[in-house]
Image 1: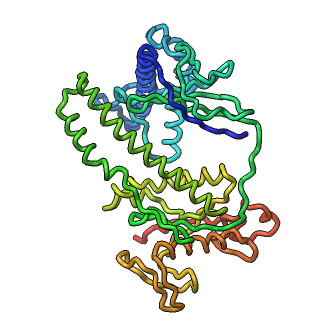
Image 2: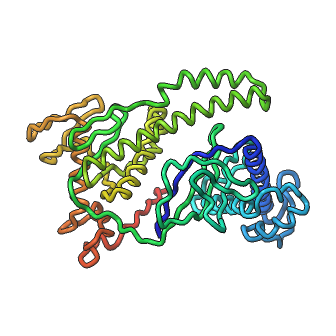
Image 3: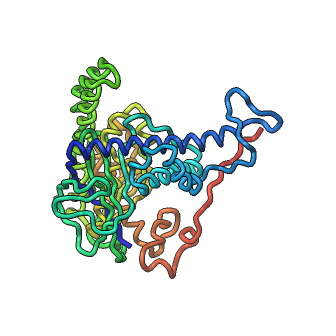
Length: 419
C-alpha cells in the first residue's frame, strides 16, 4: 500500500473561515475535557496507600476504570445532549480529536516523557476528516461536510489510481491548507545500491559539502529576518491581549514565521533534488542534531534545520529511486580519505593536510569523502563484519550469508556504579 500526502492551498470565504475557527475551538474544548478526565484519574491514584490527600488530589471511587479511548468515544453522544454546541462539528472530526489525544498519551507512556498539554485559545489549528463517500476534490473545489465547496489551488493533479482517504485542514497564520492523504494498492520496492556514490557533510560554516567538492553556503533564513521579527514582537508585547489590535499584530508575527519556514523548506527540497541529480547513492551522518541544538550555537543549528533536511533528502531519494543510507559519524573529520590515517584537527583548521600521504583538500570535502567511503563499505556485504555492516541486513542478497554481528544485534547495558 503506497501512501502519499499532498498539501494544497485553499481559500475559504469569511463565513466558511468562521465556521472552521469555531470547530477548532469546539474540538479544543473536547480535547481539554478528555485530557482533564485522564489527569484527574491519574492524580487520584498518586496518594499513599494508607491515606488520601484532601487538598490537592481528587477523590474518585477506587473501582473507577481508566477513561480509555473507547469509553470517551462512547461518551460523546451523551455529551452532545448536555452540550449542544458539540453537535455543530461533524461526529467523525470530533472522534478524531479524542483519538489524537490517546495517540499522544500512548506515545507518552512508551517514552516516559512528553506529557500531553492543555490547548490554549488558538493553539488547536487542524481538523481531520477521516472518511468520504466519494472523491471530495475537483479541479476547482474541495467539498467538506457541513461546509460545502471551498476553492482550492490544485497546482498538481492527483495521480491516476490514487484514492483520497482523508483530509486534514490546517491553519497557518491567516492562510488555510488542505493536506490530502492519497493511497494506491501497489507495492514499491526500496531502491537498491547502484551508480555514483555521494557523501554529504553538513555544518554551520558550509551548509553542505559533498565528496565531489560541491560547497553550499548556509542561507541563514532566521538570522536575516531576526531584526524584523524582533520589531514585530516588540509591537505585539505592547498591545492589550485578546484585543483586535493584538490579533492583527499576532497574525503579522505568524506570517513572518511562516515565511521563514516556507523559504527554508523550499531551499532544502532544491538541495535534495540537486544531490539526486549529481549521484545515485547518497550517504549522510547518523547524528542526533537535537543535542547540538542545545549548545552555544543552538540558534544557528535550529535555523539550518539539519534534521529536517536529512528527512527531506531521504524522501526525495526514495521518490526518485536513489539509494539513501546513514553511516557512523565518529571521526569523519579526523581521518584521511586517501590513506585512512588519523589526522587530528581543531575546529579552527579548515584545511585537511595529511602528513602520511600528502593529500590536501578542504576539511568538509574530506569529511564528505570519508562518509562516502563508509557508505560504500556499508553496502558491500561480502566479507564485511562488525557494527557498520549491520545496516546492510535488509539489502537484497544478504539473507543467505550474514555475519554473527549482522544476524544478532548487541544489547548494551549500563553498569551500575559501585557503592
